[in-house]
Image (cartoon, each protein chain N blue to C red):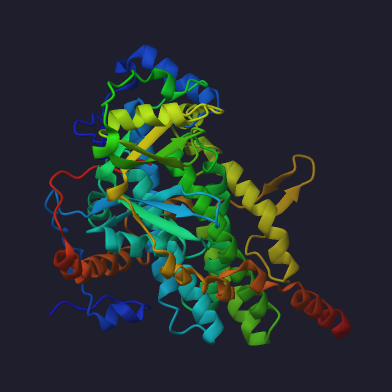
Length: 212
Length: 329
């Protein structure tokens, strides 16, 4: 039997980790990976949603759970949504104050929009920052959705990149589960304010001085 | 319009700089010079992509391996409050690894491949985590001073040129503030406590000083590639600059607690305003980075066992995607 590794880590003994665990790790199959989901957060009520980052998950429900742990574990928020990366339609990037809307060709409009679906529109106002939710448009296809967004946007700021997500493909937290974030302010052990210790240093110095 | 994230099916990471399109390279460099960020779908030289993958991946591995020496102290932390704080900190470190793997993945290398390369020893992580945490005092010194060193590096890199990495670092730096305070608080508690507690924390500081000096990497005169990586804002400060900044910020705080730093030559030169110190043993640094440190084998074995033990969970919930895509941002 191979000897268990010598270690200070109790897990090594408990899990019976031996030197055999150092053999080559097998390469997993190419598609042996969860899909990625974009996580979108509303930092404060009424502040609007913005992209926070991604999580890997097998479906939207677990993506929401992972998103909550990853992006609202330390800083509270008032809302969250997830969408599979594969369902996010992205425009090309622009720069130098050129708005991506200025490069859009006019889409041929369908006369009757009633058969269309809703799209959530996200804008990137500054390269390097996060995409933020601008609004929702109704259209028969993504091209027309872009045109509708172009018509409705006030163009006060250049937009360097656009994300479109069909509203049916984005999953927002229900209003009635928002209390899941209520407990965060109680976790003071995660907060720097819980670790003030200057008094202790001063008292120690006084003690040393008085012993001299 | 393109959908489903970016795909980088034919990444040629070995294309030399001389073979890059000069016009695209000039536009790329002008964008960085203007202070704009590079995003995943922007054109970038192969060397930039390769260096960033290597750097961000190593950073991610360091977070996940770095959680091991501290994680083992959760059950033995003195008191409920310290246990809760340490558990929260370890949870943060693993979360940081996820953020960083995601940022590296935007460059085209799948997360699972990065994990595989870590376990097989193909990619590195910070040397400092190959040293053991003998006592609770070691755990507190890691929380305070290793995290302090990490913050120095991360704050510098958060001003870099690659958008997804900068965004991940902004979030990480905000979270690290609690780690630093918690670690300092724990060290203060031991330093101002009983004689035995002071002895423990001094012994831990003695053990960690050399790895801390190694932490920022070899002296600048021994480093290569710095010029172009600095121009591309991949590397935002040199190893020596980071080491100096760490000494500037934390030596006075260590001395303030009446602790002794195990380097008789450590002092600030008032003329140059630089810290002078005994060069740590760089041969030891090389040995450890090449796998011959006190805990290299153990760290990878524990990581591998965690991967194997979690495999059935991933398999149970897995819905294979036909063609994995990389994240958008």
